Amino acid sequence: MCGREIYSRPITIEIEGAVLSVCPSCAKHGKQVTKPKPKKTGFSGTRTTPSLQSRTSTRRPTSKPYRGRSEDDSKELASDYHERIRLARQKKRMTQKDVSIQTKISVQELQSIETGKMRPPDAIIAKLEKFFNIKITETVTTYSPKDQKKGSAFRTLGDVVVLKKKKDEE
Image (cartoon, rainbow, N blue to C red; front, side, top):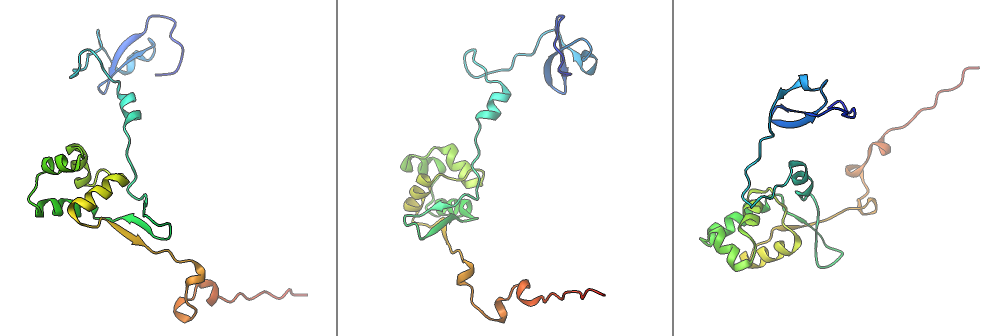
């Protein structure tokens, strides 16, 4: 815990559920345990450490734009995409398992998409739009300063403010 090199035998302690091997001076901060508690696994003898699990889990940001077929059209995933997919599935009176079988998308992915926890990859977006005959992407129009109309309704603060220079007193 302190970062010092341990020259003697390390002491195994538990602090808030975490089992650590520490030096004798840091042992006072936790409860000493005789043996680390083995975690139950569903596999035969293989375990994944929590730090490895956190490094391997990936989350995709939901604000990433969906690239359309032409470069002029910028498409983005709708903010309510998960509700649109869930409602379309319910309208067809299908379960997530039925959709999974027909679209070859796993049930876990469908669950994550329908709850909004996962942003679907472009391939799955295309499959779901085609299967349910819905649009879960929206065309986003970007404006450049050249495109803005001239006039009083489109003035910026820089157009209105007039700076006055102070005259140097002699």
